Amino acid sequence: MSAGGGGGGAHEAIPQNKLIAFGVIGGLVGIYAAYFLVDIIGPSMSFLGALGAICSIVWGASAVRRVANYGLGTGVPSIGMLALGIGVIATTFGLAVGGIAGPLVALVFASLIGLVVGMLGNKVLNMGIPIMVQSTTEIAAAGALTIVGLSTSMIGTFMFFDEIVNGVVVAQGVASGVMTTGYIAVIFIAGGLAILHPYNANLGPDEKQDRTLACAFEKGAIAMILAGIVATITPFASGSITILIGIAIWYVSFSGYYKRVKRDAFMVTGSGLLPSKEELE
Amino acid sequence: MEPLTGMGVMALIGAAATIAGASEDLESDVGSQSNPNSQVQLAPQMMYPHRIFNKAISGEPPSNALICAIGGTIASVLISSGASAVLALTIGAILAATVHGTYSVTSYLGRSASQKRFKQPIYLDIVRSHVPVMMGYAFITTFCILVVAYLMTTVLEHPFSLPLLAFIWGITVGAIGSSTGDVHYGAEREFQNVEFGSGLNAANSGNIVRKAESGLRNGIDNSWFCAKFGGPATGIAFGMTVFLSGWITVVFDASQSDALGWASIIAGAIIVLLLIIWNRNIEVAARNAYGPYKQDEEAEVAA
Image (tube, rainbow over all chains, first blue to last red):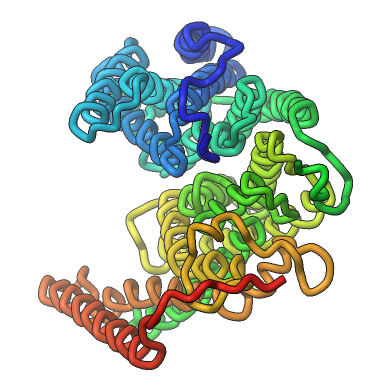
């Protein structure tokens, strides 16, 4: 068994199909709820987009865990960056042509690119990882939903272009509010690391699914807080609620993560010497 | 812009980049990130549990891109709401360093917990002593990168926004730190017990030095060692990259005429050519001075 993973299928307490449902449904519901409720109730509901993003981050982290468990090793970061790269392309395309169906178009388009990339990896590069095609599809789709979700909670909408009435901008779109301002960079990297860091941080033969996913929630919460900080200066999204909920989720998930670390570790000690020879045998 | 002002700004950018490069490399050495990490990760499996911080945040380029993008985003938010630039850059760098701290903690705890069967303990004093050091270095790196990005957007009128430039320079400083400075830690410090220059024999894999001059070695001891050469070398490498790549467009300003634009490209090509010749000469001189190993000697393992 290598240090880079089990070299076989990962043990799953929660089946991947449930996590796919959690990511897709949670992500889309969060994004659409944010979009409609910002219109109906007000900018304070923009935090729902980030909650949707956390759902897809957890799904993506679980998909990374499954495929990386085949011994990807240093390829774990690469596959996460690949996912977010696909995600940005799919999001830009999906939101630009999709209108109200933008997130759905982005999801489908990302899945398609992920499918092609996975097939290229397995058939052309001969990587021969059994779940490669399914996993790249999932990771790319999760990356796209993460980007749409975080963008929505930053500016309160996922419409790509500005809404202009009589020459006056009444609502900022993703193109001018997120991409031109450069905030897409933080979405890309904070969302991407939230998807790939959990498995990378827990790499090892005694990795456990629930601990890795607790880490995914925690990193997703950091991305949510960052989206909230940007939302404080945009008129159609409210930052303070997003930040507060993000901090609460971070605290709960970090406590849960630390609890699982203490459960799984050989020993958690304040300080001490190395294990003796007798102990190691 | 006055050419003299441009050169002054370039000097400031180069100085900030040099500090950023040095602190980035030392930060990664405290936590054993990137290239040296594989041996730190492997050691417990080869029956060598250790007290060295095992930090894997997806390699240095993404992790530095993360802290710099966070710093740039927060600074840009604060500047657009009216804060002064110095305050905005400082607060951005502080929050970025905090996020870096959470990433460091989760990777040390997670990776050590996943090595249960190899009996690698989690030492909480390692977390308490190392994470503030890494956050400090991360703050210096982020702040310097933000200074570079801020000067580029405001004075040099770069078309990209502050968060995007900070993100790009973050990837760059991580990539240069990973390729330049890590060798000093990964190939030398971790294997001080084998003959200098002997390479990594497969039998020594995972057998990193775990004992210090006094007590057990940890990541802060490693950054002390790397601060003598690896860190400054990385700083000079990154500072030169930033300075020389900016210098050519400041001296030959492409926005004034097409001819000057071509001149800047030619100047850049000449610099690259000179560096290639220089590097080649260093390599040849080193080979002549130290030569290849004549015979396969059994590496002696010092205690």
